[in-house]
Length: 196
Image 1: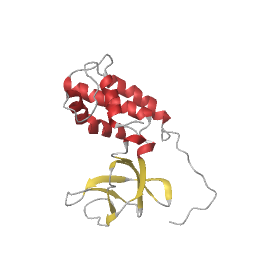
Image 2: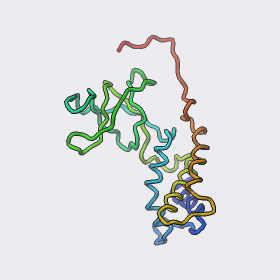
Image 3: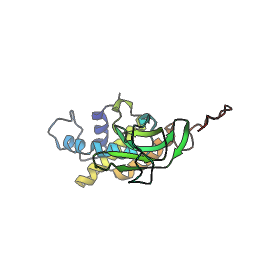
Image 4: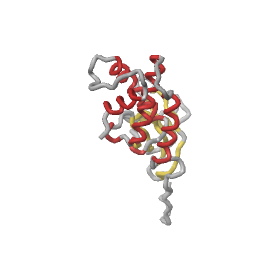
């Protein structure tokens, strides 16, 4: 089973000048570098593709219907543990795609979603999915991304430039993910659509 330590050691193995680590709490340069770059690398890989394992859908919480500060009629709370909103739609039209904007609230204390969709739903990517749910190719892409971040920060890289290793691994992972572009099933129904 994958865990953070295994993915970090995979990343360090791609850098020939670094040793693997036994614990993320050890006082080694490798452990400190890996911990420093984990979050940024994870966020980068999560936003590079709408990964199925990290995809969630949720009805958005309406904050206001104040149109005085934006071109949109409705303002919704940004989902908790969301790194990126992929689309906004109506619960009545689950395959729809409403225009939306992500902005800061007037008091600048929270991110909000603005749209003209009543009873809006959002499809989004989790900011921190459990490591145990990572598919193998995602973990491999993440390891390359961590290695690239460490190489950029320290000026050290392995036999293969980790920056050049990330893109092909990501390209290999995308079509194997069930949410890859073009593979999303469209459900057709003979049932009449509900009135708006």
